[in-house]
Amino acid sequence: MEMRLRVMKMEMESFRQSSLAAVKYEKAPESMISMAAASATASASAMAQAGTTPSAGIPSNDPKASSTCSLQQLLQDQFKGNVLIEIKADPVASVPAGEATPIVMDKTSRIGELTSCSEANKTGQYRLKLSANMSMDVLCDAEFDKGGWVVIQHRFNGTEEFYRNWTDYEAGFGALNEEFWLGNEKIYLLTAEKPREIAFLMEDFEGNKGIARYATFKLGDKAEKYTLKSLGAFSGTAGDSLSRNVGSKFSTHDSDNDRSSSHCAQLYVGGWWYDDCHLSNLNGKYMKGTSTVYAKSMCWSSFKGFYYSLKISRIMVRY
Image (tube, rainbow, N blue to C red; front, side, top):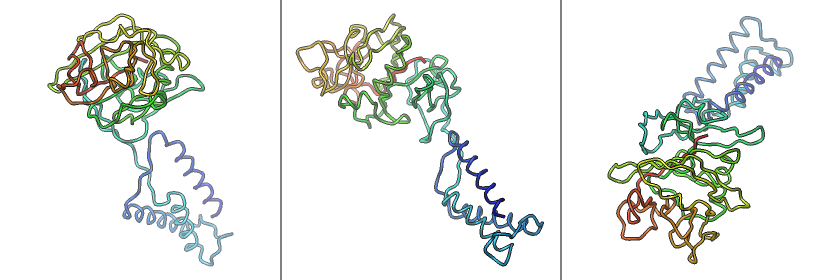
């Protein structure tokens, strides 16, 4: 019996370890725990009746009772009142090109590991392996323009504060299934090997959508203050409100790296590649539509001007 218990425990642990990418632990209802215990009891009884449950080494005079007790204890020790529940992400409707509808994600762990978001057959959270020693959790968009996009910024309801310090912008903040900034260091790593296409998807509160795409986006590293080194050719319907910022370093309220005599990040309440100062401010204040405040909001001036705060912004790098 001891040998059987050890084998069962090894098998259960092996199953648990191999299933981490596809399952999560969730508190089980008492009814499910009872059912699991009953199942273990029935299995033990059957083994004893069949003569396959040796009593040697079990501290009991009744082999059947001892084996039942041991299996129940093993079940309780292994699961600790938890059961394995399969993760099922909320379905994501197909999003036509140009849509900036918020991505719907189940609040669960990542779907799997891949080396490019082009391998993702549905929108969701994945472990992106950049090299043998470098990987990161990302949100892959598989809907826009045939997919293959890493989402680096997503805003749609104003719940996340974007007026953050340098350290926060460098490391990233928010949650991949909610509003977030991926992090300057991670964005740099996405473009370290070569320039990448970048897309800015936006939507106003009236349902009008705009797109700005650039062919060769590339960031400098930390020592270069995550300089916007390249954007390349523009295309899209929202107008070009970023090309003039090429060559600008990233600035935050506690790290002024712009070309202005003013402190642009403080003045316009965001973190961005400000120059003197901006034509776009997608990490600015979330202000819900028309505003009397000039250029402080989440704006893209060639799309809706400086006095309009957008409803949705999604920035994606093709990787």
